[in-house]
Amino acid sequence: MYASPRNSSAVLSTERSGDKSYIVRNEIVRDLTEEEFDLLQPHLELMSFGQGEIIQQIDAPIDHVYFVESGIVSLLVRNAVDAPVEITPVYPSGMIGLEVMANAAKAIYRAAVQVPETSVLRLPTRELQRALEQRPAIIRVLRDYAQLQMRSSAQNLLCQAKHSIEPRLAKWLALASDQYTDGLIPIKQDDLAISLGVRRPSISWAVKRLVSRGLVERRRGAVQIRDMAGLQTQACSCVSALRRFHTKPAGRAHNVHILAGLRADGGEQNLGA
Ligand SMILES: [Zn+2]
Image (cartoon, rainbow, N blue to C red):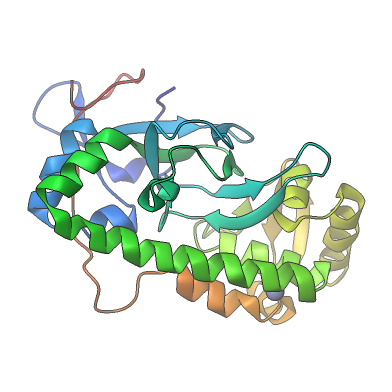
């Protein structure tokens, strides 16, 4: 399952031949002190998922939590009849499996990978709980993120109820461009339809509208942004609020944590083994 992260500059060679070290990007993990990170590090595992893969299923036991390192994961709810509806996107500022903090033994959300080469740090839930017993102060980073996820979910609900599809699509692409700085967003229209909670024909129509305004171009399995300023203008008002919720506030810790002993030849590997 393991593959190199999308941004290869995040992986650094070490003195040991064939091994690499990896600089953690997730903002929750970067909020941890050195001592707190050292407690978790032996149990963290870097994994990469492909577009459309499911990281967590509704009602499945939460054996692991996942800190997103790159890409975009969608937290979804669904029933037996209706198409899935997105509760919130999760960027490299966030985590999957936060339900364990509310003592949920089973997952409330489905977590679906939205873009190719999404990478995560996987941590066994029992190891997170052990770390919390040893260093209860770790709870602060999880509570901070819980608040941001609640705010993002509420904004997403408002957006789905009140804003029309074209500004919502412009918002989604503008937020994604924070990670894809060349403006090439590797998202399929089927996945955009799930994220925005609309049918595929509605997404095709909205993409055509943005293309006709000269804001984006369609590519195979991707959307290329052509006019970022114009896209921001076209986006609904949620874009600034959501960007705030998914970006670390000024003045918060931004520590550099390094995972050592990452094998350079690929293959799933538990770094703590
Ligand atoms: Zn909106």
